[in-house]
Structures are given as structure tokens and as C-alpha cells.
Length: 165
Image (cartoon, rainbow, N blue to C red):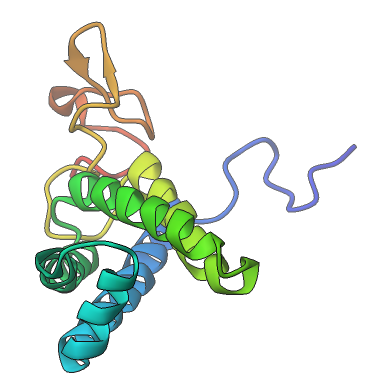
């Protein structure tokens, strides 16, 4: 059976562009969510209190979403922020599940997006030097390896994923 996109076995699409777009859109969504919480402080704190969480968590999540969203957009500390967003969205999914799938679907989607960014790296464009996959889960034999291409940071030259440049 022929490959439908005529790639002749090569990787289809542009991974760098795809990860850039996913990262930017996720960052905008997280910044918007944090900004909404900042503008609606009483409702934000009440929402967290309804889930038996202290008010300091509401304030912490607010600023985490704003700062972390900006970091995703810029492509800095991508692995760290995507991992932390995944934890936040896992908790949000669990807490919102009792209200039904209609309410839980957005945190569930953002959980999947956060995990995709964490495991795929930041892509080609961003301020950070490496793709964001060098911070722990990509360790192999004690060396940091890129989850995109398998290179270590010192082997980045000539790498086809483009995330080390």
C-alpha cells in the first residue's frame, strides 16, 4: 500500500512547525486561564475552596499559568513547564470529572497537549537552547538524550530534528 502523503518512508510534515504551533497555542490558553483567574479573584478562590483547596493554591496556580504559559510561548524550560502543566491538568481533570465529561474535556485535552509537548520537545523555534527533552525522562545509560533524535547535547551538530541548534 502506498504512503498516502507520498513521503516515500520519510517523516511527513514539519515537526518543528507543528511543535511551535502546539506550544504557542497551549501557552496562550494557559496565559488566558491565568489572566481570567487574576481578574476574577473572588470566583477563583471560591472555586478552589469548593474543591477543598486553600486560597494560596488559587494564587499560585494563577501566576504559574501566566508565567508558565509565557515560557511555553518563548520555548524556555519547555520540559519543566509542560511536566508541571500535565500534573495541574491531571488534577483538574480528576476534580472536574464529577461534573461530567462536558466540563472535564478541556482539562483532559490540555493534559494530552502538555504530555505531547513534554515528550516531543519544544520543536525548532524558541529561546531555549535544546528541545526541552533533556531534563530527565530522556535519560539513557546516565546520559541525556533527545527524545526526538536520540542525540546527546554534544552530538547536536548535523541532527535532523533541528532542536539542538
